[in-house]
Length: 353
Image 1 (tube, rainbow, N blue to C red):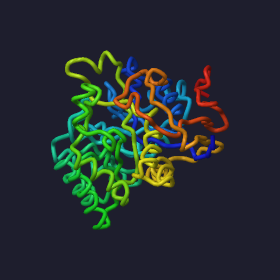
Image 2 (image 1 turned 45 degrees about the vertical axis):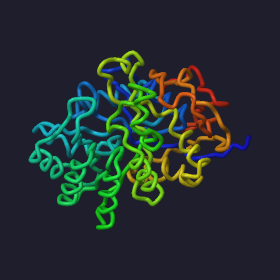
Image 3 (image 1 turned 90 degrees about the vertical axis):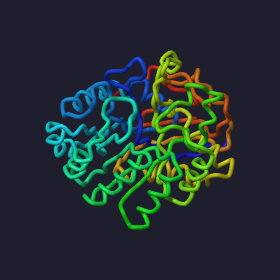
């Protein structure tokens, strides 16, 4: 075994479900899953059952995180366009653990959809420019978000890009020197809509899995720099919930993403240097994630292993990647001097600082 040391990986797009849906995940199990997967800093999304659209909800999350989280944990603030929400933007944007404002332009989990263009304009206009606006925006909605960000001179991050047309929209915006970045999820890189025939509800997510042409465009966009980072969109549900009718959207990703990217290196779709760039250097730079001293991950990029959801630290012990051969299982994970993973196993008894 030839271990290599990397800076702790960063995932700027996770749904840890705390508070309000902790039967699916909470800050303790979610950050344990992160560490087990090689991530030492994650940023939680605001679409809880009670959305993070006020300073009170943000303070509640921060208190819970301080009590439960075992690795670095920040937050994205949410937008609902109400007067109270808009009034809270200046203070929320100054919060050291808030890294951006999330706007939902398409339907997904939660009740934060914004469709009124006048409300969207006000949100873009009001959010302070020093931190980016993140959007869930598919197809034509992405075109609208790019236009608003350009008009109001705001940095835009396009979450979980999934369609060939979206790759082209981002590429065109970058050619025009617009300050825009984009992320892609492993499930959109490795799966297509055909997976719904073999994996059923486990392949139901938002944005939905695309066609083979979309998958090829995503890989091309990742390789040519149109897409800047890989983000998991870790969206855990209990297996019983996921098998319900209709099934909730989303797939757990914190414990599979790193191994799948090293698989991409073995398959020739990425270079070895791309993995730390996509999972550490670029997300840290784009979102100004704080330094984590004495924090690192050790793994062997050539070590194959089988993805086994039964061994996940997440409460969501299922995955459409179950049984796949991945590479580079995290052997040691240290966060600010504290060993969380040792010899490939999570250190039991580890708790929040």
